[in-house]
Image (cartoon, rainbow over all chains, first blue to last red; front, side, top):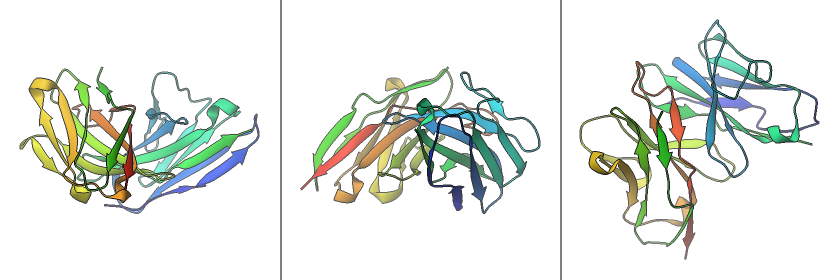
Length: 114
Length: 116
């Protein structure tokens, strides 16, 4: 297993601002992902974070709204830009560890936009 | 495209009773199947997974699940629940690609309540 940390754990932000969420893993990973969990809902994949190149976004998610970076194998950031109350969600990163096939999730970042 | 159905939104079980949470999937090829648990305010913890082989898989915390291809199901079971099992349970299916599961699709979840 691995330790997956996310910062911040929670935040309250004003509409129109941006928040950058960090995800750090203490082991070698092959893939990293970002998910959104809206209140009372299931998880939806936002994008796959690719090392050294642009992220691969799922339908309904765009880079201008959710820019993602992954400068190395074990670290990624997700920015939620120009926030509105509809962006209030839990944002989770997940990873596939080297030699494994299943995804492990970080503790999540609970974002409230007022 | 794959999909997952968890028909039970909320289940209430007495402590010590047995539990079965239902999961049905839709996927054209051999699926990779997972159960995750989310306690209040927490991230997701992997309970168990099925990739191939024995259709009855054992997981952590005394949970097991059985893959039934003919029924497109992957139900989660536990013979005796504990109060600490109260949580939200998510079934997920992954596309069989090079790494196995880049495209994880989650069900809507089943909230489990345990009563004394």
